[in-house]
Length: 315
Image (cartoon, rainbow, N blue to C red; front, side):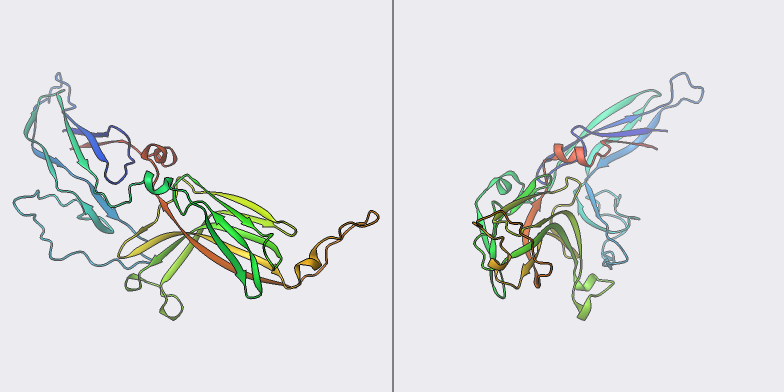
């Protein structure tokens, strides 16, 4: 019997382009005084990074496995296929690295080996993309005129950051009675991998709301909101099978009446009580603003989604 312990020195969360370091300790757990104690031998051991893609089989029809891949690897590689027997699709498998050959351990003896690998660089990494700030202004209008101006200081965020925006309604010619803004993810399955088609064969799309702000804004000239991006959520990505995008989803309720009709009286000679109208004819419309959400620092992400950094297997 042999016990193998693999420990990630920095924790289980990494960014693309970072170096992963793992310490592998192989031990013969039998005590030297055991009557059945004997030496244990291993021919060889290798380590590699393996990433498996999983999806809901009720919505996604994954492509069949590659039949051209032989059951036995070529002589230049190991015979171990890490994805064999796994559900889903293998999207990343680094070349295996040999840790040791012809290892023999006496009872109670252990030996440690270091494995390191650089994760492939596929992301825009990260600090430079999310630290750039510049004011973006958007005019919001319906079919009858301008409602207001929306301002946001950046369009690229990291998990854990807050999406802060301002809304100027004082410049509008159409009175806004209420608005709401939701931080949402939009998941889209490509048509060839869909199990359920949308209306008219449209791509299957689902939305999840992570944060929401709603405000009654009659007589409001300027307001703001802050929506936190959960650390436990998934950053945006796109594959040949499914894509995940982030957006701000706005919904506005506007008055069909001229804005001055809804204003309270001013400069009255005596104190009066103003009462809003009991009924106001309204229109509603929505607007979507795409944003990008990238991964956050591994140290911060490990607090939100803690995972084991040590794994043990007994052979």
